[in-house]
Length: 140
Image: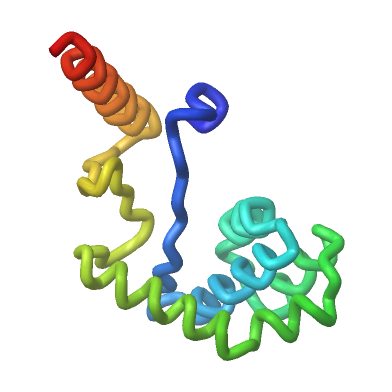
């Protein structure tokens, strides 16, 4: 979708580590530490690919594999600002009604999605509605 609409669609990820997953919070903090080195999406993708085998060693292995500066990574991952950032995301998620992951919002509205095709349809409809509004506003 981002490839299809690079100037029209923005993807925002909010951390919402589930308490039922032992390493979810640490993984969220690690992703934010990777973000500080410009590798958020790559790191996050690998976290999800390894979700069943996630542990401290796997998190470090992913970071090494992405050639992150390991000293900076470890220090950042365990820093107060990163921990506070993840906590703020969780509080925000709860405030907007997130109870689990993934939860997807499109233009601030919770999207009921069963397949990736559903998401494409919702985004296409939103883009068409936006374009129609722009055309209508321009003709008045």
